[in-house]
Length: 276
Ligand SMILES: Nc1ncnc2c1ncn2[C@@H]1O[C@H](COP(=O)(O)OP(=O)(O)OP(=O)(O)O)[C@@H](O)[C@H]1O
Ligand SMILES: [Mg+2]
Image (cartoon, rainbow, N blue to C red; front, top):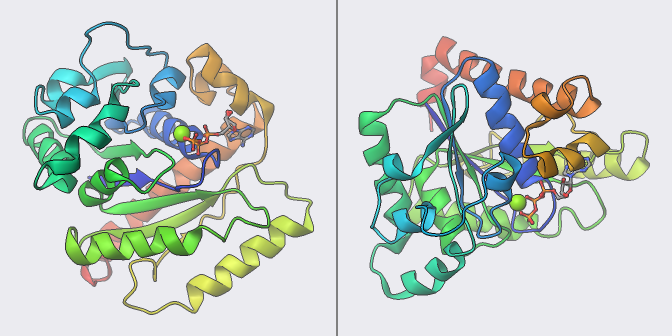
């Protein structure tokens, strides 16, 4: 069982596109997957064809303690469940401000969900901020995946993001590790993309071995810029349903295979996965 938070406080870098297509791709490979939409913008929900109107329960109700995740999640494709969001979730940030233990609400709800329903993967699509919703995802996750758009300010926000991860690791969740960086909207023929990847790789290899990102990889699958990936959400479909022969589908399948291969590598060398 893997719990992955897809996080970057920078907006529009490919978090939702990666969360949805990774989740959909893993489900197509036969894994039981639940994607949690932690963004009041509800883009992951919309991408999977779910628009919440009226009193339908959402992840907001789970944060408010009114519903369990089992009551909120719904099946959106074979093997793929969604815990949807809507704009109500924006209120949670404010409402939780005075709640003791507010950083751990999602973790409690997930533990309860997993006690009755086994999943192979939980994928959490974070909002573009480092607020209480993202901290809840980091407290509940074991892995952080960071989508990054390789342009010249890409590394700029990374230190703040990693600092937050380190803080959560120290205070709330010792199991948390950054598993990797996914380069999104990648233009393979540009010098800039290569430079950013090289800088990032230097940074990761020079990091303190105790840092939660010390083992992070840059996924060798780069997600190229592909218009089909931008069109798919408006049809409420993953790239695998919307345009299975597109470069976007090929790239996300590559990422799925890499994510699965980490799982098999960890199973084959239990000592290594236990270390740290
Ligand atoms: N590889 C790609 N090629 C073309 N368009 C893409 C690609 N990846 C994402 N997009 C588009 O770029 C926009 C931003 O992507 P996405 O919503 O995944 O980013 P995000 O990090 O989740 O944004 P936010 O911070 O607002 O949550 C969307 O319109 C999406 O469809
Ligand atoms: Mg998003």
